[in-house]
Length: 267
Ligand code: BEZ
Image 1 (tube, rainbow, N blue to C red):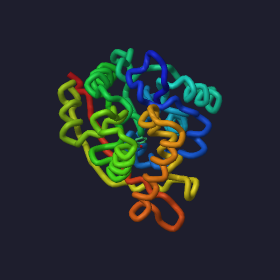
Image 2: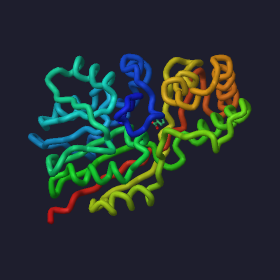
Image 3: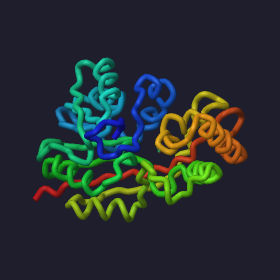
Image 4: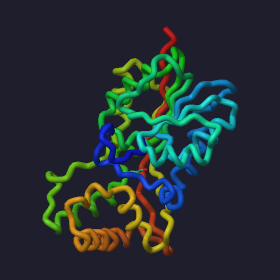
């Protein structure tokens, strides 16, 4: 779910998104999704829910297949932009941990959103409930080991400012295949495919790429810090990561993706 700091949200650590900035600097999030769309294989007239649709680019790509799409997100700013960009599509405000649907969709799709939802059992229960019998769930998000180097550098830098790991509440959920597929099975879904794989991802903005990533996505870690401290932390992260994640003027995020497909049994 592309989050925001709103009272109804289940994850108060999720950023208050600036949708235009997000599109300008992090467009790679939807550009990497072609394989996932092939797995979804949308059919004419399929009714599909895009969970955590953000600014709606993938919702629109799926809709181009002739399927009937509903995009859902918890960020009003993201939804405003999605509606402005794709006025013919339906976008609704939803909390992924409290999905309001019952046997309505042929497929639930989600890209780069589930790692913001820290109560995966509630999400899985809602997805299972939303699907029609025989419906499918196709998703990709950050899995176990995602941004491991980046997180290590962040925690070390925060420690130098007097914050220990035990004081920090991470906004993210990065499960293993075993953990996540067990949750889906607990809620009655039959897992047909699961893979965890490295997806090193080039960040835009040259030398400022890593700093911008942390500013956009990890803001909740900096709330207790002064501007000077935050600047020091961001520089320290750059210094720690430069030997391994900076190549020829481009920062590379050490993303690890969990991709899953699951089906709701017909009977
Ligand atoms: C990800 O796409 O893996 C991700 C994005 C923002 C924060 C954490 C992870």
